[in-house]
Image (cartoon, rainbow, N blue to C red; front, side, top):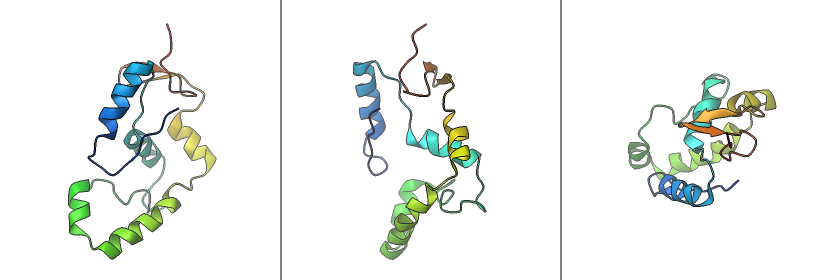
Length: 114
């Protein structure tokens, strides 16, 4: 597994896709994982996880004060503290599945061979 991260809109997805193609790996976006986790939680149960739902990230960063951005960043670790049952459901652990048209082994995210 190779993780590539950074601020929104700087090209992580482009780099990840090119690297995955070169290494014959499948890809999974953290946006996809976040969407899956949000599907098995609610804003009431995990408000920090749903903080950015439906928000244009570019608008979010330019419309908030530095203090608010810091506060939101400090809340992010709380968003990732989910019970393992919810994480397993969100990740589909142990089950092969299709991701963006590719057969993907959920344990390694490597393309499954037919």
